[in-house]
Image (cartoon, rainbow, N blue to C red):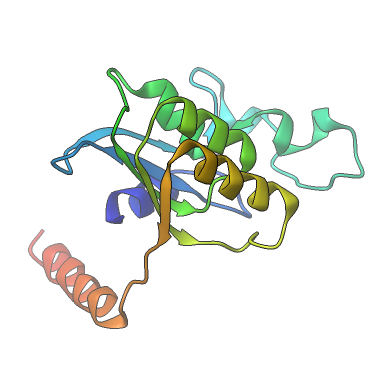
Length: 157
């Protein structure tokens, strides 16, 4: 999950930073993605607003790929039987992509959209296709330990 959290840091989205990492059965990295513009587009040239009352061309939604779609599109091999670590529970569009790739399990941090129709559809897609999903709870001690480790590491530079 730490890799997914680090991937989310690369997102230029000022509102929602999401990261995704797919790993194989040995927990070896297969692919990583974050929510951002498609490869080759200067992200400073696209709108990052989320006001749905303006035309789509002035919203981030017309330009941004979700982290899961980004990771799937960058995978060099199969994702069959892999696990996905994602910082935010997938939307229904990404759930379709994940299920079609035969990913075995999704582990996520946040489920902040749990009461939306899109989220309920995602869970139904996963249930119908046999993709397991579970929320990961990170203990404060782990975060504190990582924080101290990173500070010590930076002092050695």
